[in-house]
Image (tube, rainbow, N blue to C red; front, side, top):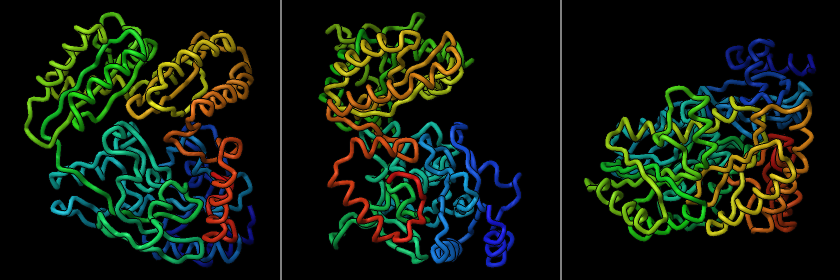
Length: 468
């Protein structure tokens, strides 16, 4: 750390804006998975957009790297400073106001530091629904969700975060504020700069607020966990539900037997409803803003699936308590995996129709490559996104997991590319996948991205070492 530089920073800004002591900085310098560790010049905690502008202008004049940070829940090290002690972490946690809610316009404007759960609550209090749904809703911040273009459980019906954004306020590298907090659904006036900032992972500026789309509150839901013999059967069920339920189908989550067994074993109080875990399961949910007998409708469709041999069993939630219990099983799979043993994670997507073939091909090859590991492939089958993970449940020799990681990653990502898929479906690139972007990204596309980066951040201060 440069003591002279730190002295300049402290002299330039109010004391309550900065955290400089080791104990105060520590939680901002390590990611939540404890994989990435850095050392910051200081932690800045701005209270206003003007504070952010002055901080970035000061850093830009001196060529100091800025690491924007939301809830620090990145899986890819996207919000962790490097070890140089010269980068300023700018935490948005104090910019956490709900600025306005307009139920008639189906929109709300919130600051970047708002927890996702608080955004959902603000929408609900206005009789509306905000569909972004993540397991980390109680800790992730909406600014981070926007910066990474987060996915989640409802992408099948509502799309990624970018599709939920109407307007953005952001501070650029030189301190200027781009303000476009409009709720217009139609605005055909040039480049879509808001969409450009969403998903840029803090490399083009700091998102400080956003105007988001809302939907009418859900008044009817129907949720079921369906037992299936294979991913191919899950695809057949998806096609049946789409044909019979149309846009009422909001979620379609694929779960292998091992996922249910892990939850039963490692997460007390979250017992899957089947006495014996089936080879595969799907958690599906219908929802509507109207009062509809969705439970009866879903039961009829699942009855047809059972009669056709697509499904072998189904448990339909008959109360909100049961609905939440089914969702708890799905949402606790990552934690159950963590408790079960060390592992390797892949956040991939392939065309929906190719998922069964991909799982079969990759699963067979990985069983040969790493026989001590178990494949846990689960996630958002409805939109083509799988969390394609390997776990060493029986324990691993020292260095075994780390040693397997490069060859496993290369095989999985090469196969994903051969299927026309993506190595990063919803978690972003951060610092962990920069090399993968260079390997698989379009040369023309990467050139365009670098040109945009150079235009908006010519001194390269915004989240250095991430994405590009």
